[in-house]
Amino acid sequence: MQVLPHPHTGLQAVTLPLRGHIRHKDSLGNDVVLKPGEVNLMTAGDGVAHSEFSLGEGPLHGVQLWVALPDERRTGAADFEHHVDLPVVGSPNLTTMMFMGELAAVTSPVTTYTLLVGADLELCAGKATLGREWINLSAEADTRLLLVGGEPFAEELVMWWNFIGRTHEEIVAAREDWEAGSERFGRVDDHDDQPIPAPPMPQVRIKPREKAGCRMSKFKNKVTRTSAEKAAEVILRGVEKNKARVLIGLDARVLDAIVRLTGSGYQRIFAAIGNRVLK
Image (cartoon, rainbow, N blue to C red; front, side):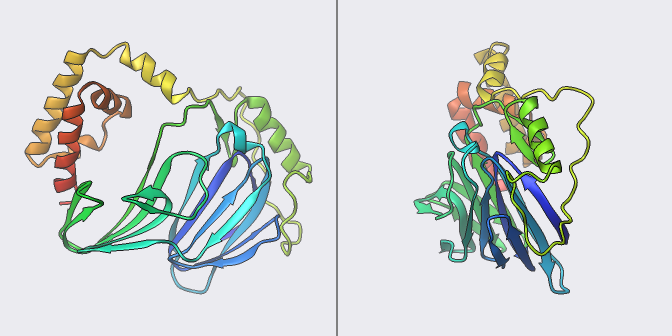
């Protein structure tokens, strides 16, 4: 992997290698090697730039998650954290490493600005329980899982390329600043001034994503309690017949409606999923 200097705004980049090493350099002056079991958190704020290069000849396997920053933090100064000692919890057949948020009374030291959770789960063949009977897991072979979640993001946002803003104009300004070599993003050393150029803007105005609450309120007006209960029962019948896969393509709005309108059905659904979805 060879990713030359490129910019970000309005997000946190969470980098978690599972195999292989990554060298991270940024315009804040950080130069670190990231290894499995560690996590990098780069908070872009109003603007930052970084590069990422794999080290060595072996394979590289990992994830990078982008977390949208809330309004009160998205225009602040950039920041960087490199965590080498993340909390790890062992239980029968299961090892859980918390890299963001809190789960089962275990809290990651990584900084967050919204309510979310991120955990790296290593499940041995067999059965295990995550948390205090929170969810039951089972697998026929050793399995690696990534658990991520959080509250719906309530603010409108616009995302294009590496930029997250609130309006089309903010995205245009960020692109222009990057192309102009603005001090807004700083400079990543030792790359001979070879940043990745921004692609051209689309020939249409970028519309903000609707707030999660707005989408839900529009949908709830179309869903009666009776129809949601029927939907829950249909799903439960499928799960009870070892067909948990019926949930894979389920529209999140439908699931939200079931959660809100039939709480008992929601609990039964996920109890069943926890027992069967990994089989």
